[in-house]
Image (cartoon, rainbow over all chains, first blue to last red; front, side, top):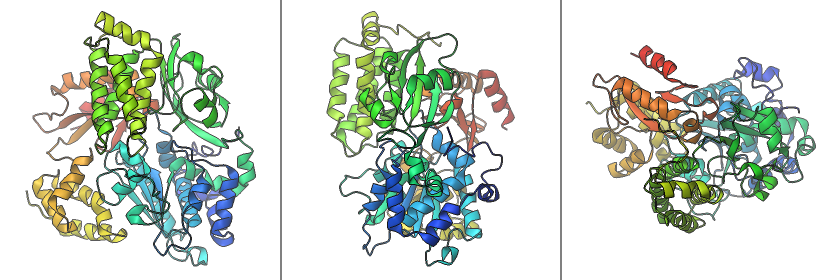
Length: 425
Length: 157
């Protein structure tokens, strides 16, 4: 398969403008500014079938089209580089090794909505990625790719690399905008959507790094070439981050619809040390875990993973072998969500900590028979009852671990100890 | 602690604020400047930033307390942050943390008596393919084992 996002990822010094341009970089940007009307650009991206790669999979061109064209307010484009979903490390790779592709995509998206100020919101911890992007932006200013009257047109665009300060929730687009406004990263109710009421109440589009990085190729090769890849509803290619008990962890680019089992066993070398697969999370820690028999016929596209009872999400694939204690895994993720709940909505703020405590006591031999139903009850009461999708993201995996590995939870409770894990101390 | 920016930092402050559509949007970068200048964001630093930004100290405090990367207490020269989330845990992160605790004689959240190291456990740092890993100040250290971790700690003075 021809790579789109990772095509230059191993080229040495590719983060520099000279290398990026010598491989054809910024040609799409020039063509867009010189020859395309925003509406044509939006139509082209709609025709490509590109969907948001941050996790939700919303059609990118359609998202842009919701921005009002006649608004007197400034418009903002935000590149969401706040990669924090456990098991996901694809955006970091793009930022560090191919920052100009991320920047070029950001510029193209800004032009589509006629924004004159674009932000790249980089997760605070990703200092190296932020430095790479800052250098790329500085190079682009120096050579007139951004700034005033770009390529002699009447179009001006400024780009600001903005660093977050440590908060998972800021990956959620409305929380990100609260953070970008200089506040606590608290999500806001939708509607109104950011496309009409975003940063400081102005029309704003937030697109993920991987989504934006696909744009230069789509503009260069045409929407039809992109749409020819993938499945009917999941077009193009997608990055998958693979971690856990797997022979060859890393970031892979696959055509949408690639068989999950083949991917794990052949491309990633399977579960190492002769161990058997016990469970796999297909789309980052927010998505329900799947048992080995559940992935037999799954393909890696939005629809197929959803049909199997999970979601493709960010494409963060976490592999767990037979030695993994599923109670401890569930507790680990419950602890993550308890730590990261922003505290705004009661069901999530209280429920996440409550679930964490219960998982903890089951793992440590103090669980009670009623605990599992209690967790399912709490998770059911979080689902759909919060401002942002974080609540669902915390509730779904908790319930899935119990439903799919109930025997193991029951055994922990019955024997009053962890029945799987070797004690460390 | 002299809670006032040096002339150079004050210049950086003006430049930073000037880049944003509204002054308040510069809050996070200004807090980073303050943390760099003062070492941590204590009550005096927060009051100073509030004055500079034209906001109430309580509001600035609210922002500071929301984000994990703002330190409200002094920390060691090298801030060790071991990732504890699932992919790193599957790769043995708990062993790494236990080793560092033993080696430095401190618990999570503590600083060594000589002010050299502070140890924290943090959530996923987007480095799951090279687990277990830790971040020390801005740098990532990946594919850790006890031996490698020991060498890294010894190299940091």
